[in-house]
Length: 301
Image 1 (cartoon, rainbow, N blue to C red):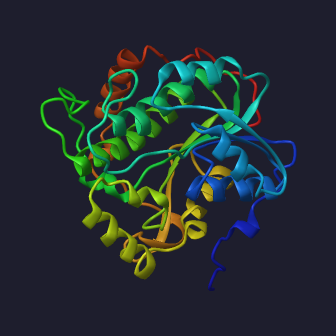
Image 2 (cartoon, one colour):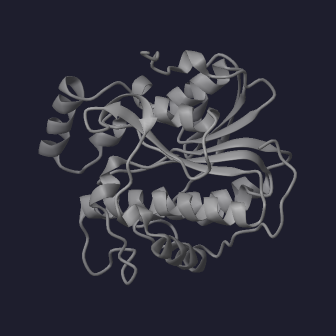
């Protein structure tokens, strides 16, 4: 029997739930915020530029607020977490940068690993005592080309824009796997999930630093990519549907480049639990943030 493809119209009632979406001012993050607010959630736009966040939130129908969060500055991440009060049902680690010219975060990390992985790692662990439901981290099928350079995580000896991006997206999956393992080990009801948007047209493709590459991406976005509305579906699915902890969701068609949500495939490197544990320990050392739970805390699951 043919099943109907899952869409955002099938989101459950999220009334009374609180959702944090990083990078919610545009692209996939804005769609994710818009749809969860439409379903009744109170949505916190966690964004670097609060003026842009206010403009974006004004386009969303429902309960929203804007708070400043710069994932490339661990002091900002700590400030965001320290101000949090009460429960948090769903944390969606959506924000990211892609294949940009070499840059450094405030703390000296390579910008892509620092923003996409280390910033979200710190944010998640600092907020975990408040989280009652699940953590969703957005990866990419580009993780398949990624390799974790444990001896040079911050690309100081050699920098490749796409290599650093692939590493950061692989780190997202290893982080999710180890987070799921640690949560289960302490008996927490909180679950960890990953998702990827396939090839979705967003503003990420316009910051390569190359006019030729930006122009090529602009054409590809018009001719090949699916919309950001479709690209956000795997994240929304991972955030709300009954899934086992550690799940990975992506588009179900054309080698996971487009289509409705379906189980996604991990590379062999993304399934290496020894590397997941090693990366976790390294990231704890770099960020100064550790896993905070020692026993199960009450939550909604």
